[in-house]
Image 1 (cartoon, rainbow, N blue to C red):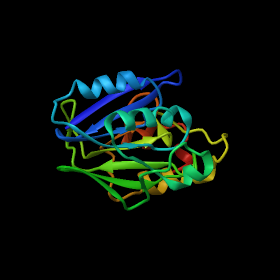
Image 2: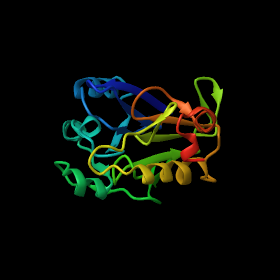
Image 3: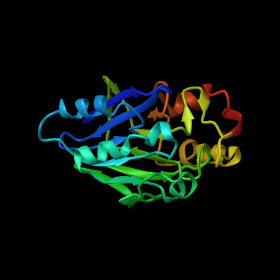
Image 4: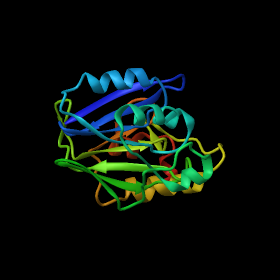
Length: 209
């Protein structure tokens, strides 16, 4: 497995490079394309970038997607609902929606629609990763700006909806039978956490439990 996090731009966006030893995706390349490109090119020469994936359309997550796509000649994937809302410069080569999967050899990423921060916010989870940093886990989920360590995404921007955001956290994460408390949450900003930790300690837990 390959999992690298780069903190890019003045908003401290987490850009993730994730996949198998041969196929990877780049999630949320919002800034610092040179650093992202160099990180990928320092991997094994046989690694193939099969796509750029946006968890949502805000500029701090999407602004350098075009540069990355052109460099690696790779497709763009995100939700059509954020194209409508934010007018991202390029239509997706593949529109992502709940139920879609992204195959990375022996790793399968499942797409969840998790609106609230934006209308087209998505999350991506896999149960195929069972160990991270020496710890046994049940899987990982990339949540964009849906939920953070001890907090949640903002809903005061255009297209945000607080009721929808809490519903997404509740139904797609906290009470999703595919996810356990031992799932690692890899958010769009700040550090990693787990579903179980957020069930116990998130300051907004009363709104989604």
